[in-house]
Length: 601
Image (cartoon, rainbow, N blue to C red):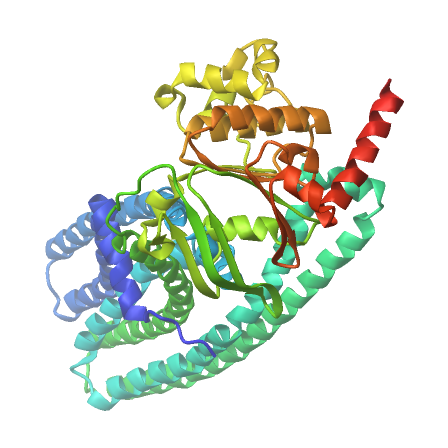
């Protein structure tokens, strides 16, 4: 069983601190709600006591009417405060959860390392943190609500203890003992929740994956063409059933606890009523006092019962708040552990020394060494699975080597601040992000008013996308997707990749990496595009990855990777003269390109 990093009291203080930081009026409203919740029932139990006492003492009717007026005015004030709080708090606490802490979590996600985000552990921690923020009846928002109720329940119980203090102390001890028994019984359910939450999270992850896959329009064609609907539905039903089984077990334990709690309440209240009736019959207390005490015991029992139930739920919410804080701590640590900027001159050299890297038990690189001299243009080629993209991710620090060093101008990459490190690279991935906003924004990756529009025009022309942009009604301000704007455009695969290439050019970083971003182009267009990049990046270090060897002729060196090793290295001319594996692959591809030209002609 994994123990939560933060306990209940720590999480209560965390909620209070953040409410105070975000919205102090909200905290005052929470306090007002607690006061009104406690005072309202006290008025209700004291009013009958005073009215009966007036008759017992035979006091004037005028005094009784004044008393009724006093109670009426106080009840009206307290009731108004309670009504306002009941209407104000749900909306404001929801805003606190979703718009404030939710936004902060979204920003925090940008401050955690990609290698953490992409790891299984990272994915699980993010899922748990999002769960704490996802709905109003769990996690952050529910804990804030339950904090109000538990505080009111506790204060109400204490007030009633003072009222009942004139009675035999054993009565109070018995009532408190019953409350503790109810809590201990209910806490067993909470411990079971903690024990099983990771198992439930795994099942929820599978269910969400199926749900997201069936809703994503990208998969809609495959689902229909391959008749996947029934299979996906059966998987969804299976994971729903597994999830329901877990919750059924929890519900069963909750039901058993409810029965235990009901039995405790039955004996507790029965004992109290018998005791008070005996005091009245033996003239030890007046009828007015009996009315007060019977109301106080009933109220105390209600406060204790609610305190137990709300505390159990608050403990469950606390587990999720702890998950949220674990994720936020990681982001805070990354911010606090920012490294001072280093002076890194250009052009940049890159060296991998004795690098080892494995996916689980599968070794990708073992004692791998590679040096890319400053300003050189390198082509990484090889069959799928040779390790080309993994090598790029290692160089970019998106994944972490098991051992060894990655040096930038002789500086260990781990000694360079991550944000400064990312600024060194312009990267064009094949599956890069395209936002449902203007093409200019997709090139600059910042707001339109902060975008250098002349530079956007320049790189769009260089990438070959300018003709497409000119044909659009709103030009470069046209949305690159129709998801948010019906007047947007739908770029073809080749056009999307030209946009990605324009983005890399716009950033204009000292190192350019193209990770097969032009696979949707025909071989000739790709070769021409790469040569164009070569001409534009003479003073930069560049790494080109392509499965088409015709795009490597202009590079200073070609590295042929196979099973995590460089099996051939040299210029295109040298490798063709070597007549090895590279030459064989090039000749095969050239044969197909030649046939393609014949067919087209």
